[in-house]
Structure formats: C-alpha cells, structure tokens
Length: 136
Image (cartoon, rainbow, N blue to C red; front, side):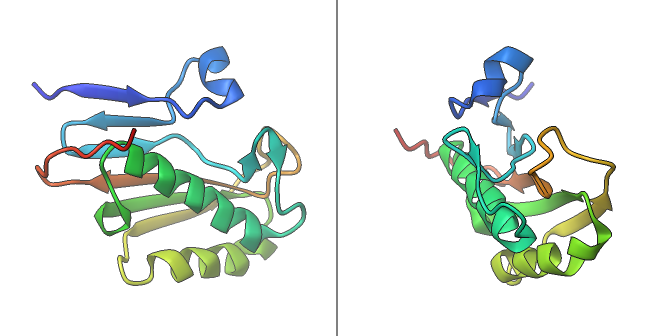
C-alpha cells in the first residue's frame, strides 16, 4: 500500500472546506483546482490568459513542494466560464506545457466560486518512483 501525503498551501479555503492543495499518493501527485488568487485577491481581472498563467504557476509551485516538476505533468484539466476564452486559455497552457504535452481537458462551466475567476486548473504528475524532494 502506498503512503499518502497531504500538502497545504496556507490558503484560506483549505481548512474551512476540508481539502489539501496537493496530495501525493505513491508516484502520483495531484493538485486541487488552482485559480488566479494570490494573497486572497483575484489577479488578472478580465484577462483569461493572465489568470491561466497565474493558476498554472500556483499549481506547479504546489507540485514542486511535493517533489514533482513540470516534466512530470501527465494531465491537466481546465475549467473556463466562457467558450470565447478557450484560445487564450489553451494558448497559455501550450506556452507552459508545449514540450511536456500532457493529456488535457478543457471544459466550459456555468461559473466558478468567485465571479472574477475566468479559469480553474487541476494538474496531475507522475514521478515514477523517484525519491521525493521536498523544499522547506
């Protein structure tokens, strides 16, 4: 049986809503949904590309804390609130993950928790038995 580790980011909703920013289960490392919320404020208001890049950065930082990196990413899921944002969001995704080419899903949803959020992203990585490196 694999060891399961949970990592928090210190965000305001994790304890309140009972979830972890990242869970590492053996060689699989999975993020919760990440948005463009930095220090409690939504950044990139009205700009789906900027929000996507911020959300991806938050997800990658969270993965790094659990021992995974960009090259380990195997799946992404992108939730957007407006189909017109698809090219901006997918283009931002491609600018980060173009060499890695994880499987990806892009879904239009009715809305996200904060109406200022235009995109939410989940990322999964597989570290293939490498030793864990945790930055303190």
